[in-house]
Image 1 (tube, rainbow, N blue to C red):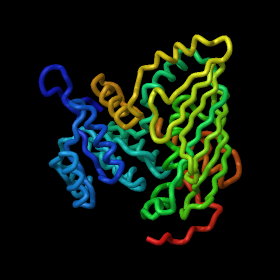
Image 2: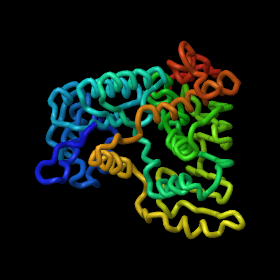
Image 3: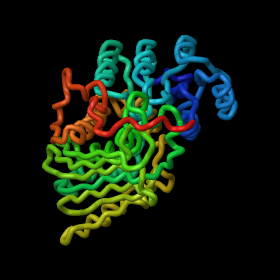
Image 4: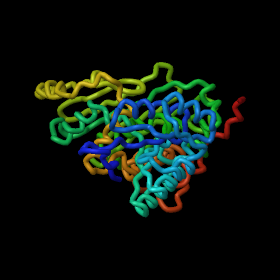
Length: 378
């Protein structure tokens, strides 16, 4: 994936982005693109609902609209497509974009199953065109600073971690036809909500080794879980708890990392600033407080803008942008292992879901312990 040729001089031309799917999350993409100024420009949108596409295009000042991704890709003139459609369409659209020679930036989850992710990886290998996944919390200033401190060995070994996504969604939230259905959304808060927090957990702590989990449908009118909890061990020896919920009235997203020499933690809801993070040094390591205070200030909330800026930087320097498909697969495998462990009532090791395992092709594995919920009144 190469940066666009400069329009003149040495400065790269803006990355020409197009948005496929103009629902709610598309607005976050459009705002993040606009915030990058001349580094990235939104040039086209598409949606099967042509009226919605036209209204969205008018609101963001884009002239080119298309009734399908196929039409948009055929028209050319784009360097990156942002896939902002419901999850069951992600894999097919990413593959179509790659075959058209256009990299895809896909909203989470990348796909509904490990089998779909592996097919994306196969086409990427075949075409040489990448698919990236939106995991914007990896790119905030505080996280970049934390990862540098870890890499430099300043915090010592990671020992214990806590990852909580405690959110609240009403019954009406699930009235949208694609929400809460295994075959369309892929799962409940483990796939669609907590995935951002535990992706960040994995990005900080590295490869996970084993998961033991439970999942339940406590009260929401959904086919999927509305709560899951997991105990995780990492290859490094660290252990962590991961809780995902949609039934928690006081909403909170919390990560805590206990290293040998300090505790580092953050609490926010949908995005953090540098000020939301704290470091508490262990006795004898008080100098780490000053080292942490050197984190770049970031008063704006972590958002898509941070990742899009990193993508633009990578393209300008000829590097491969992140989050790449192999990295996204590790996060999706963690979700699959959470479901497999919960429904089979057994620990699941990394790499254990493979070949003809039913959890390769569906996050439910066909083993959901509760009966299907009745149709929600629309």
